[in-house]
Figure 1 (cartoon, one colour):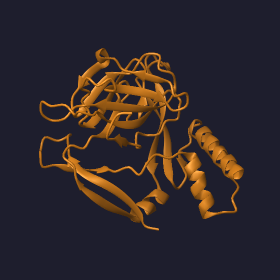
Figure 2: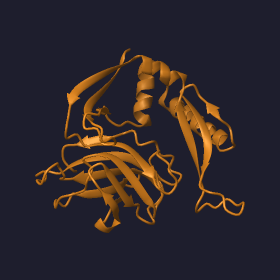
Figure 3: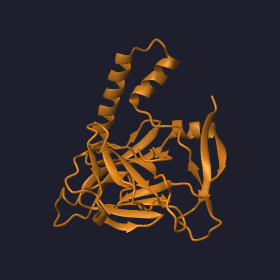
Figure 4: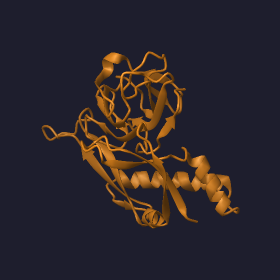
Length: 254
């Protein structure tokens, strides 16, 4: 089966040349393991749900344990290597300043799927709201991880938080507990159309979060009548967060 990725052409906000364009993914949606299990059973109807759950859970646990014991792991799908962040002071590991993360790169299976993937350009959108990347400014990580009490940067386009609608702002929703935290205006260090830098709330519990930027900003002096939003996946602590690949655009804030 031929794969297909859809995208919109948009201005490159990272460079100064107004003629520079990039292609922004038009996401098909956001899925979890339940959908993966469903797809696996569709390909092999003889597989039982409980067997799949057991095998995948065991696979994840073994891979994680091998990585945390210093092994470079090659699964065919990805190549993973454990790494450290932060400066070592006085020859000691300091959990307050040092951390462990895992670097992932695509491997043979993904490279083969890429070769079978067709790109469908939907057209050009000059006012497309999107995120290019994120960065935990305390350690330089760009995998969607955040450190409470430290700065977090988001780069993209049409991100400036502006407007008087009550929904406008940046909110964190814990994907498990559904607990919600909203930033206050004094937590923003940079609030520009192409870049946001803000303080991650101190005491934000470890976990996976949906971070939603809701704004009425548009080019010019006028504001949008109805706010629009974009949601990315981020995580705090040892939540095992995924990189911020899943972007969800919404024509209005929820």
